[in-house]
Image (cartoon, rainbow, N blue to C red; front, side, top):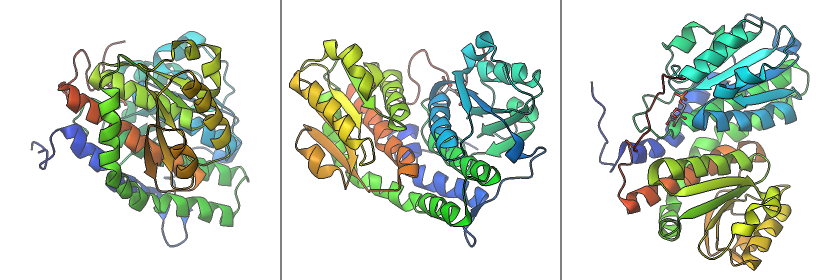
Length: 367
Ligand code: G6P
C-alpha cells in the first residue's frame, strides 16, 4: 500500500523524525541487550583472518562508509581502503585473498555499486553488503547481507537509511574488533551501551528545531556555503554539503577543517556562511582555532556542538545548535541528524520540491 506523510510536510521531514526509531530497530537486530554484546549473522568466513577491507558506495552511503573507515581502523585496527563505487574499478586496487569487500547501499540497486561488487567478486574476496532493501540485486550477489532496518525511504535525499547504515557499521566494527582481539568484554559493553543510549539522545535533537530554523534563515540567503569538520566529523560535513546541494540547489562544499587554510579560506567573506560540526572531543580545540581563523576574515559561523562544547562555541558562533553530549564513538551518528535537518529547513524556505529534487533519482540504475 501507499505510505502517508503522517501529517509531516514532506516525506523527508517524516523520515528525519524516524531517525531514533530506525537506529533502535537496527540495534535490536544486532545487539543482545542483556549481555550488551553485538551479534552478527553467521559468517561464511573468519572475521579474525580478514587482512584488509575495501569499502565502496555512492552518495550519502559513501560518507557512511568514510565514517565506517574511521571506526574500523581506530577501534578494530583493520586497514581500510575506500572509494566511490564509480571510481573503484579504475583504481583496480591489489587485494589480498580473503579481504573484505564492504558495499553500502540503501536500494541495493545502484548501478555503480553493483558493478563495483561484481568487480570485487572476481578477486576472491568476501562480499558483505549493508543494505536497506534486503531482496535487491546486490543482496542476491553478496555472501552476507547486514540489513539496515530503516523501512521504506521515499524522499530522494537519504536520511534515516544513513544513520541506520552507520549503526550497522558501528556494530560490525565492534564485532571485528572483538574477533581481532582489540576489544575486551568490558570495552565492548561500554561501546554497546553508547549505541543503546543513542535512540533517546537522537530524539532530543528535535528539541533544537527552532535553532536549526534560525540557522536556515542565514543559509537560505547564501550562494555558497562552506561545511567544515575534522576526523569523523569531516564525512558529516560532506553529508551536510551534499544534502544542501541536492535539495536546496545552493552550492556547498565540505572541507576538512585543517585543510581550509590551504585554499578555501580565500573565498571567505560575510556572504559565505560556514557550517561546522564541532562536538567536544580531542579535536575540539584545533577545529575551534580553524573557525577563529575564518571568523577573523569575516566568516559567519553556524556551529553544531554539544553541551560540553557550548560555552566555548557560543563565544564565536553567530548561531549554534547544542546537542546532548554522547560518547565520541557515536557522535557522528548523532551529529548527522541536525545537519540533514538544516538542509531540509533551507529547502523548505526556498520552496523547492524537497522530496523530488530536480535531476535526481532515488536509485540510479545507470553507470
Ligand atoms: C542517489 C540518491 C542518494 C543516494 C545514492 C546512493 O544518488 O540521490 O541519496 O545516497 O543514490 O543510493 P543507494 O541506494 O545505493 O544508497
